[in-house]
Image 1 (cartoon, rainbow, N blue to C red):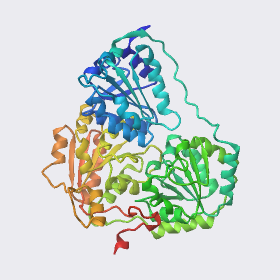
Image 2 (image 1 turned 120 degrees about the horizontal axis):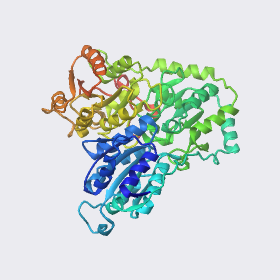
Image 3 (image 1 turned 90 degrees about the vertical axis):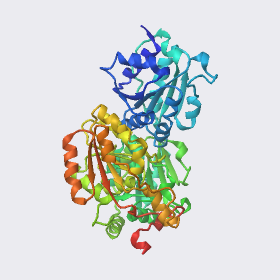
Image 4 (image 1 turned 180 degrees about the horizontal axis):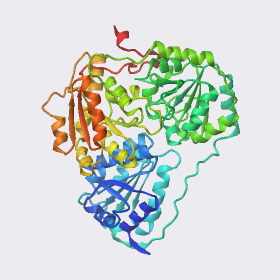
Length: 557
């Protein structure tokens, strides 16, 4: 049948099983929105307050569901407003397809109204991108975009479509979705045998899990692998939930704000098995001193990550789930009782603690964990609150913590929580923010109330940029340059002005009943929780130091 380019875009989205799109209309993309109008019963569109919110919502939808998130934007500033969200998804390997419209082909390159080379701008921060200038190429381009976004190492793909293509007509034929098949050619007998030999020779193995284990759906195989190898487990921020955070083998997060048990244990191990992690500088600290006593075995789907940041002694390139499945089939049960007990003693010797007499971030997270029985979907912004959310909520399942790890995007969480709730309507979705982050995209509360998306926005309000202030306190002689946020902004009144329910929490005893009520109400809620400006995230590794040099408040004394 003959369809316009706009109709083809909608039909291709339906082919791919897309049920929700986040976006903001404008002149260049009007034809697409007109076509979408005819299919409102099949594809729900969420009009965000800002295009950046749409890109974060698509990202949150993808992280929460494992499906491809989709966002729309018009040309020029509409398209450029997606850039931060696309970069966030790229750094964390999240499958997103961003569809933008541009000026007509005859106007390209002439500095036309609202023209920008969005394909050129996003080339370094997309897995791939396209500009479509012929309507005949549109359908296959959309299909390729979805396949690229979700295959191999996932990532964002941008499709820029000129306005005339959205209006032009061509033949359209529906096609079956091309299945994603994992490439197993790189998982060779030699690499498997080398890995098995290293594991069998190890006396003190440690397993480190990253976001790749979640992307590949490797949780079940990972659990079995841990039991066979008989080794303690740590995770990166992006790997949280891939391995059950309540399991006795689990030692907590690794890195700059990781537990001492994980940091010290990895420093002392003789074999570090890395599953789907890329050795970020926030994980390794001083790379020359990272796991210096260990051989390193890295499992990753992306060959570019092997030996990029840390030299490995052996590696297996391939999908984490398939690699672990094959190792599990061949490995005999190992026994490292003495080593595992030693690391458990480290956990007992260096527990996570905080000041219990006042309202603090750790107290809030522990209470959220208690009230939600550890089953909530937690989204975060970036900063101290993000680290407390990683440290004091025990993630039992993959896709339970959604956070900007690689790019560290302040303003990410509120939009992402909207996307997460649209993808996982049955889940309690809570976004954890600092007051500095919340200010950046707080207009998305209006999106939540427009569609009655019942997310709970909790602001850890210390009236400062908390993580930056922590660095200024420890490393900059307490020179608090532009990090104090003492002003007249009332977040409760602001939330109520946008149609949400607001709570102000100043005492410990006020929080739990308010949270229980917020969950029961099932409407958009904001909770403004006042904490001390000088609360800090402990432990900490100083920039440039080894993770074995992690220190806390007691060490400073």
